[in-house]
Length: 336
Image (cartoon, rainbow, N blue to C red; front, side, top):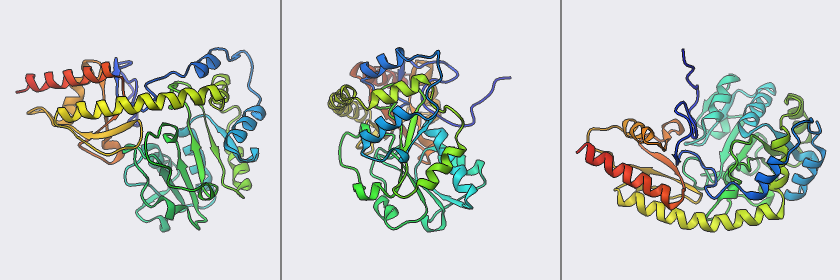
């Protein structure tokens, strides 16, 4: 009996690695050469320093914060579950989520018995993401959420390094009042390396220490540690800046290609966007996506984000865009 995943994600699935994968938001210009070299050279014969002393120092210097505010994490998803456990242990009863959001926020809340509420003032744990997923847009009411709030507000900044337009909503002062969750593997094009980190708000040393107590030993392995160290280097940041220029050009071309198929593309400031496809006659969206997947092309159905009838597309190189365009046209011909 096969085991079906309990959550919907992009990337490889039971059919293997898609030949043309629009379903993840990994930097399509990647992998970053300096980060890849660091991962390959990592010494996997030894444990990392259990306290991640050097790594914390580099990440703290990179962000201009005190080292006690930096918490390594096995992945963003691991930290989502860990901070939800902290909130539940501190008496939280409810969580507030953005209207469209990553499924692990709700999954972690359900696992710890937290109700999902419609109003931020009714929750003790709040989630935000900017650029948001799946829309790649500014987070509604984020500034108001960050100001003068004593509850836990976690800002998922997974896509901040892949921002292609607009500016962050929060000021530096506001950022110091929220939890920040960073996952550089997307920006570096190394999503298979599972490592992340969080930055605690100013004055939250007690909560940071409590999260350390909830963490298993060595949450980040040697390869993840090497990637995070490389992330802070000037070479990696220069490569990232250059990749954003390329992604902007590819994105404009990809949107034009989708619109030429009659798709309605939604506004986005990141390296991905959502679209409402013009479906071939007689096919549902799920059937059309399954037909594409059989041809090695994978798109992300956004139903699990709370946005049915749409897909999320990571920006891909022109040749991959053309493969999608031609396959979709063939679907229309086959079903006309």
